[in-house]
Image 1 (tube, rainbow, N blue to C red):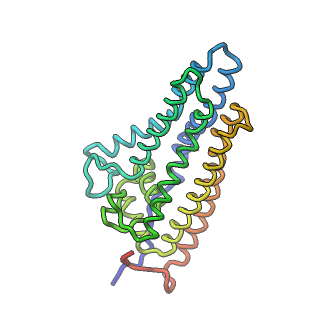
Image 2: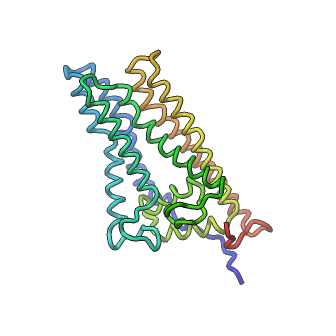
Image 3: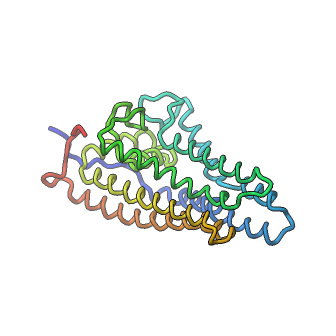
Length: 284
């Protein structure tokens, strides 16, 4: 007899609310508030020249992200790791970690170029946050295009092995974030896989959420980038736009996602067991 028990993810987000609150408070400070506050305070309340101002700002950027990057690298690399993808080696980092590596390279190059000139490029210094969202949005688009044309994974994408059928782009990001950063561990990766394989409603939710984030992220970042480099607005305004609009959008989209997911998961559980609502280990 096949097991028709509802495949719980066994992950209690409420128990980690203080850790989440502290983390996002730090993210808001060093990825939104501090860059804007320092920009105006140092430019208009001190005698520092522009080059010194932007050196100071650049050294304060994304401290929380880089600390989290170092911590998750250690957790994935350590011999006794409890969050690595099953059957992978110590240097086989997950998909999110390689994406974060690319993001950090892009941001570092932007900041280095912007501050290397005698006259710092203020508009380019407004680009790190839009570039982060654009990089993730572009990666999601590439994965979805490959899925649309039934192209198999050219290399391991977290729990999807080389040659395997790709999952919705957001599925992989959720898997990696919860397993490593959220302390869900390798067990969460396996439970998430079981849920995805056995629940059509869950697969539909992952697919819809991927497009819900991917499409506006790409469109917004194109629009924001255009505004940043548009000569019709001054550098101060362009800088504020670059550091505020993507963050404001992501915050609003996150709230909407939370409510949507809560409703969808409740519906999924309520409909579990009804005719047509289960698909046992189908080959996707």
